[in-house]
Amino acid sequence: MSIELLSPANPKWNDYLNSFLPYLKDPYFTSGYYSLEDAKAECFVYTENENIFFYPFIKTEINSLGYDLDKKYYDIQGAYGYNGALVQNDKDKSFIDRAREEFLKYAKEQNIVAEFMRFNPLYQNHKYFSDMNIVHVNKNIIVDLNAPDIWMNSYEHSTRKNVNKAIRSDLKYKIINAKDISDAYVKAFYDIYCATMKRNDANDEYFFSLEYFLAIKKTMTDNALFIFILKNDVVISAELVLLNTHVAYSFLGGTLEEYFLYRPNDYLKHILIETLKERGLSFFILGGGVSPDDGIFKYKRNFSKNGIYDFFIGKSIHNKEIYDFIIQQWKKKVDLNIQEKYKNYLLKYHYGVAV
Image: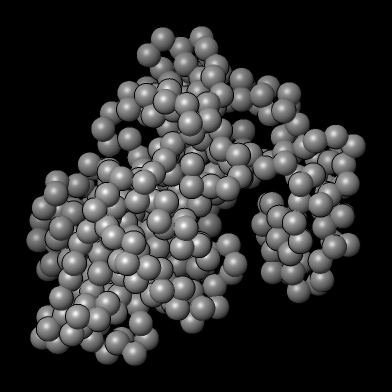
């Protein structure tokens, strides 16, 4: 038995990840992805012989958020997107239980107050966290790229019509792997992404900087691609996809509003599905909506009528006394609108405070 805590700079992080079966070498778990975070990232690795419990997270010092505490306290959460743990030999439940027991010891020693995760709907890795409060919050859409005749069997009729309209409108596409993309194309992606976020009045946590996307060129060289849809040589829609050899994730993107009538986003998703299938991938995870069965969810479901998967989050409070004390301070710092907006967030005290 061994326990290691690794930083993204430690080559052992990806060494462990690469020891998993190919389909589990997930882009969301790479050191390159976690190195994009401004906060401190760690990976807790518990091993017994060939069994591996691999658990990356962001560790935040709560005091640094402006709270008056008697000593340093921390919380942990996964990086943006899907997270949780990967397990080599997940049939051995007793091994998983021992791994979590050791992690809980670490959490106590490190003054971890709270823990939050967004589990992967494909891997259903919430099952490794029986000690957490597991909450079913939504449904996600996943396209099975091995399904026969996706065009007829998975797409809704309206989606096929929209794709055909895009083709008749003479839309073009360009797919660029992260390692090959120019700064100019990253900037084109960023401009469309920001315009879309502003149009949708997205929360601040969904706005990433241009530097973040430029860094992806270096840290996610083999695990990311960009797709652009063009009309008369003008980029009108774009998306960033994270991927390995088995699964791809629709990560971030957007479309210029004035070009909606040409259905560029339907065309973009269609081209991605065809391209990923040609590359030999098995699944394309589109994600879900902001709330259950909203317009975003229904739009994504149009590409995979039967590809509906449960999506879970996990919450743990490891030190309730300190957690409650932090929440008391937070309520004194922020107005009632902020309190109402984030009332269901476990780590609500991250929001609305000036750091």
